[in-house]
Amino acid sequence: MLAFDLGGNCSERKHALRKLWQSPERNYFLAFSRWTPVINQRCNEMLLDIYKRCFQNSEKETEKICLAKKFSFWNEDLRISRNKVNRLFKTYIKHKTEGSILEIVQSSGNAYRKERAIYKKLLLSTKRKAWESFCLNHNERFGFLFNLVFNRGSSENFIGVNPNNDPNNTIEDKINYLMDNFFPSPSSEDNLDYTPIIGHVEPMVLEDIEMVINALKGGKAPGLDRIDFRIWRAVFIHDKEFILDLINICFKFNYFPEHLINAKVFFLLKDGEDPGLCTSYRPVCLLPTLGMIIERLFLLQLNKWLDRNNIILHNQYGFREGKSCDLAIHDLIETIKIRMPSEHLALVSLDIKSAFDTMNWPVLLKTLESYGFPAFFKNFIYFYLKNRRVFLH
Image 1 (cartoon, rainbow, N blue to C red):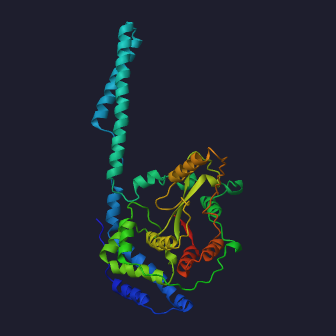
Image 2 (cartoon, rainbow, N blue to C red; image 1 turned 90 degrees about the vertical axis):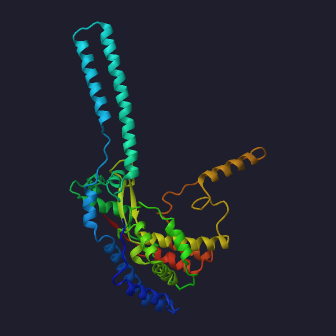
Image 3 (cartoon, rainbow, N blue to C red; image 1 turned 60 degrees about the horizontal axis):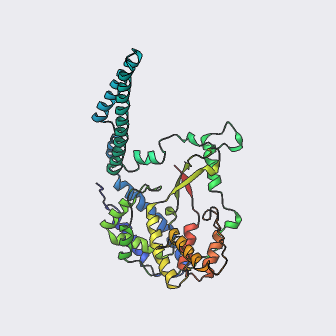
């Protein structure tokens, strides 16, 4: 049961948020220099306060979780079947070693093999049912099941990369090598030469936020703040106006708070890959859940503008609602069927490796400019990309 209380200094924070929201300033540089530190400070204070209040009884809850029953499938039926198999096996071996007549040896052998097959089938079905029951009924948040699926229970010594083949490299050296490979320091070409000028945006309404909050899926691992979607849903139910003001402040100043773009990262070794290669690892970045909520609300605004201005081509299938690879393949096959009787056809398929990882941010902002994107979208994306950091946990 999640207990949540917005007591204490919450009224002061809400007053400060509304003061920000009602600010009439339109000079972006004045507003930015004056209010951005305040937004970041209030955001950080709020996250810390929510974390403390939600987990004020965490010591007792943690103790209960640690004592939670782990996955087990063994039962009395399996024990009886196993003992029967052992007994028949001993009988079969006894007849075989004592030189019993062939019919008795064969009969005891067949009885043993038949019962062994029954035991194996029972063992597999019992394991499967027990695992399904455990997965459906477990109540640990990112506990045993999460650690098992993501191999988090093992030591960090699984990292097999070895910079310069130095046998004296420590785990820290190996991790730093991986971090530098996946998250290199930005070059001079990556510097965002962009001057934000505040742009107007229609404020969000409660209906939009309710739609996003209600669509949140539970069980997602939280980021550095350790606050999951379940908690934000409780906060929203407790005080909807508070969340509405918080979101609208970010939108009003076209600003994505810096505390919400810092990611927690860990590395997964790909199945069957050489642990000595950096490319054999998959980095998994976990972002603060409040930032993910703001992202989805921003996406609502962005999609409205894209649809209204007919920016995205009809044949764009990727990352669009109602579109998919299956639909793209279907349309391609239909086109081939129609044109094949009278035309020659050739298909050229291009795949850009690590397309998102190699995106040039200055080029992205120039592309937005060329399509006439309003200042709000450019500013928001600019602050979303600026000064991003990752932390290994």
